[in-house]
Image (cartoon, rainbow, N blue to C red; front, top):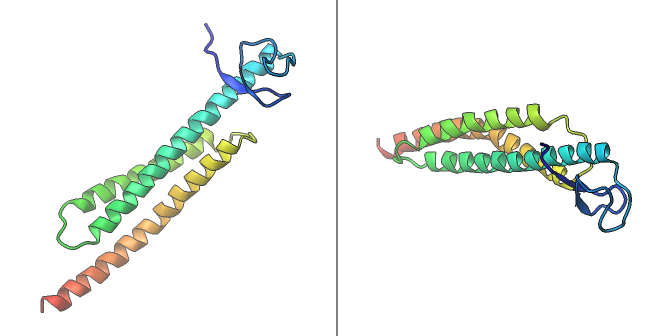
Length: 146
């Protein structure tokens, strides 16, 4: 048994079910094979959007842990930062492998690409900020406790 998906009607762009033989909005005929392919593509786009959202959220969380780790004497935040640092790059690579080759004009997919890119930029900035922040923090602590 097939799973049903939704997709935009090729004629009026309203969202319809892939099991329909004609659009319920514009009454345009729907080819069942084309509907099935469009429905599966839309399902992949939806999953790409969801995964990109999780990836961006993980990147924001990583950056929050990074900023908390730069506060002296807050124990074990560095561990949360390191774990999320590796989790974020894993999520970025996994998203790219699974959804980077999708060909669609769906505006939600463009937002998913943007979310993935935001996560990548935060990830690229995180390690230099962490290193510089710890060097700066060590210097400040050395000056204060002389």
